[in-house]
Length: 167
Image (cartoon, rainbow, N blue to C red):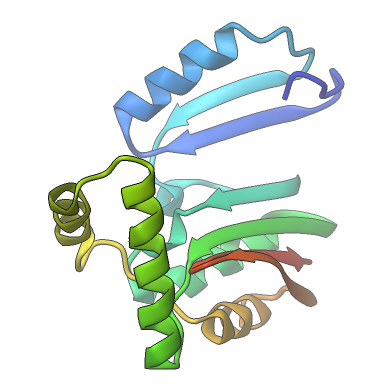
């Protein structure tokens, strides 16, 4: 955002007031020429129009499964032709052994970062039935059904993935 031209407008959205305030504080320190607006609202209530790029970082997984495709369709309809959605999500794997291995490695990484087994367990419990991941295949199919002409997974680290969807 620091290097965006004045012709750009950036709109940041979060449903957490604390995150919105933190973002506003960070943005206030920038020397960006672009207009930056930070909103406290749900993506489900957001109108998308005339957008070149929409970025969803680990957001869709917290939205009810039934609301995901309609939201993605609204985003696709609000993008300019050739516009892109960058979707980053935690993914689940159809292969139970792969899922177990990736989860184990992720928990080992957390331990290496200083998290205790109790903290890891508490975070997992807090997110259970709140964070609902989907498979890569389901994400791709949903994005295609929502109106994106090209969909490319472009990065994955363990069970976290980023997908580029082009209108």
